[in-house]
Amino acid sequence: MSGGGRNNNQQSICIGCGLCCDGTVVTHLAVRDESDLGAPLRGLGVEIIAAAEPPVFELPCPAVCDGVCTIHDLHRPSACSQFECKLSQAVLDGVMTSEEARSVISATLRARDAVRAGSLSAESFQELVTANFRVEE
Ligand code: SF4
Ligand code: SF4
Image (cartoon, rainbow, N blue to C red):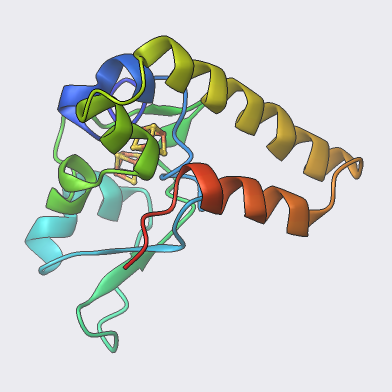
């Protein structure tokens, strides 16, 4: 995420994506503490779920707008710059071109809109997201 996605090295594909900020790929991000969460997100009303181990904050993040992180040049949690989805890893590993990745992102954003419009099932969308973005643990 930068102007868009999380990873500074992947700005070219992350800008305008933001699927890891809006709750599509993951539902929570881990933070060390309040200072890691940072003043910009606190100012937007984000709170740490301290009972979780490690502590987390919930997505969608209020700082993402049209796939762009609006606080990228301010303080972001460290997890934001460290996060790599399967797609960004594939580009970093050289097994997918940035153009191919952008095409997958565009198709996924269209599918997300189709779910919202009721023309695609949530189950089909989740399968698409898992196949292209979620890293097996
Ligand atoms: S989901 Fe992947 S490609 Fe999209 S912004 Fe996040 S890291 Fe970048
Ligand atoms: S602060 Fe929010 S919008 Fe910005 S990179 Fe992190 S999760 Fe995404």
